[in-house]
Image 1 (spheres, helix red, strand yellow):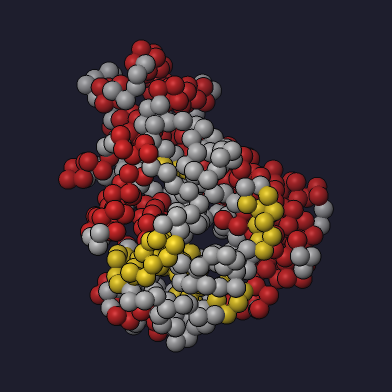
Image 2 (tube, helix red, strand yellow):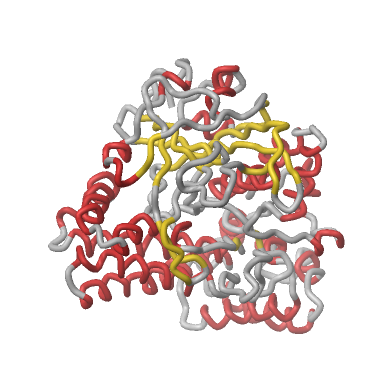
Length: 497
């Protein structure tokens, strides 16, 4: 990374500059300082992300970094800001929202001119905090820190988490809790709701200014299109569809797919009451607040479609016609189906395409549903199967109640594998690189939270280490792939998390 970041030994506070977003003007954000966090202390950081950003490992634990990344110091060359946006929450127009507890410190710029924005979540009150206190609790901060990096290791587009700092300073949710700050990064934190904000306020000049900025900075190829704004919507539809196809493939559930939580770059953004599928149930709701199941696992692809339609409505004044807008929006479903077909075929080790593949794949998911088999472990066990029946079958069959139904399916599956041309070992290697052994199960996150609440942060770093190589066997950490214990059934995660 030294070629991209030649000044990696320079203090982080001296490297941060104003982001390109800050050039848009006061209609888009409010300049402000973070609220100092009382006696901040270091909890953890992602060595992998620090390396990618050209930050020397020794610098992450310095007093300079701690005070900067807890909001207690202002960068020398950047003025922090909180962005304004609006959005639909649970399908209902919520009006003006904004960064209620997140402050954009600035950006790091590599030698190619590419920016990475640095944002502090939990950095105190902003003009958009509404009735909130602007802080983040330790438990939710741990979950976001771990899951951001876990998703990146799974190859899923996401914001990233660089550092986690804490404090004994108390904040109040259902009960008093200690506070924390997550330092998170992304190329941009612009959301669908950023466009909705100006559309519903009828501020069409600002809407155009924002769209032009996004096109020029992130989608310059759109400028060659006859209608650049239609091309922008197509790009966002395709990226969003690809992201959600990745979610479905690993059983990730976001929990709060409101339009203000949807990234214009197709990044997984704003980790709250998320969850990874364990006992498979397509109707599973990971967010205890979501009583109607709007954001269930099964509904995520259709909600993604709903959200891009909301964005399309906001971009309609720029695109110019309903017909062109609808043409762009149709790319979402096409893209999702394409990416899901590719990802699901890879999960089953199918390098070629056959007419019966969709039925075969759907039937396995029906078996998962009927048996409530663990999704992650089932696909991992499937990855170890040989072309012919062997002892490796037991690891898979032990996860299912209906072993006869599974055996019948496996006969069809092996007949299908016989049509593949690549060697069995190559297929298994490819499947093991596609189907993770380790995901951030709720009970694993909870165990790290409970230890941290007692002042022991070692489990966070240990779990992060495991999650950053999710496709490796890691014999020393085999227990992290275990089925959840009985007590985990009582865990609930809500929007307050």
